[in-house]
Amino acid sequence: MSLRTLSVSALALVAVSATVAAARDEIRIVGSSTVFPYTQAVAEQFANNTGAPSPIVESTGTGGGMKIFCGGVGEQHPDITGASRAMKASEYELCQANGVTEVTEALIGFDGLSLVVSRDNEFDWDLSLADIYLAMAAQVPVEGKWADNPYKKWNEINADLPAIDILAYGPPPTSGTRDAWVELAIHGGCEELDYVKEGGFDSKWVKENCSRMRTDGPFVEAGENDNLIVQRLEADKNALGIFGYSFLYENLDKLKGVKIEGVEPTIDSIADKSYPVSRPLYFYVKNAHRGVIANLNEFIEEYMSDDALEAGGYLAERGLVALAEERRIELQDAVLNAKSMTAPE
Image 1 (cartoon, rainbow, N blue to C red):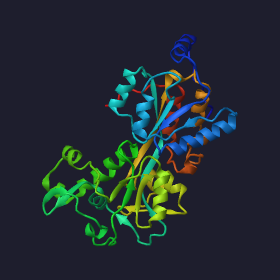
Image 2: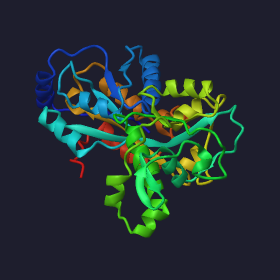
Image 3: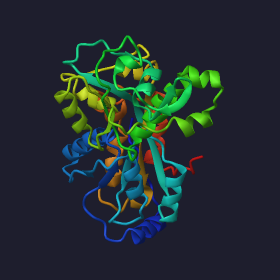
């Protein structure tokens, strides 16, 4: 595909230049720890290809990145933020209130929220979503009543699981990974419970009563640094961890995926949706910075290149599950031509 360059009228360029006064030399990127390794790979490729300064990429978490990104327009504010979920309506409104009125949304591919364990752990793990919920949620059914989670060992929730302490390291509430985990795994597991199905509880009840992770020890917030989870799993072979597929992919010599509903997290199972806990990944571009921040347009072109995004591209080699060709072409057209997103519903 021949890359298209963004055409900006002279009038618009003058207006944008006035808005973003003293342009800095380096591109600044914040956001999701899951999207971070993909953006960092593009940054390295861009710097190698062009000789330009490598963009500064910070792993701030999706929620933290949105807050920083939507803080305003100008050299003190970042140009791009990565996200492991779509922008929320409240974040869009924050952007608008702070003058960040033209933003392009880029769905770059898909990721599996991987539940993983050390390769030194010899048990053949296969958890249902209900098992996951009962192990990690703050409240569960206990003798016919909704109560604080009493379970301490895996075999207490399922006799086929080992008699070891439940310990799972996962992301904090500011993380898009946490948002997606709660929505896909925790809500999904809650909906599988007989208590919920037989009680006739709807999705609103599930959201209100099944969204909190336990805080009494078996679930541990490990911060935004997924490498810290890898280190903790190496130190404790019985602990489980939660993070994006790319971190499992990069550490297959140390870690193995836990089956969920009988399916392992792999590129193929995420792509064909047989793996039950998968999600889209995004980045967002501040269009007022295009043509003003040095090399920003060229960096975006590299991110949108076939070399990066195709199924055989260098991001797929790092664990990103690529979009289908037709969808990828639509993405490239929208991002390269600065199509602004509309307000999320």
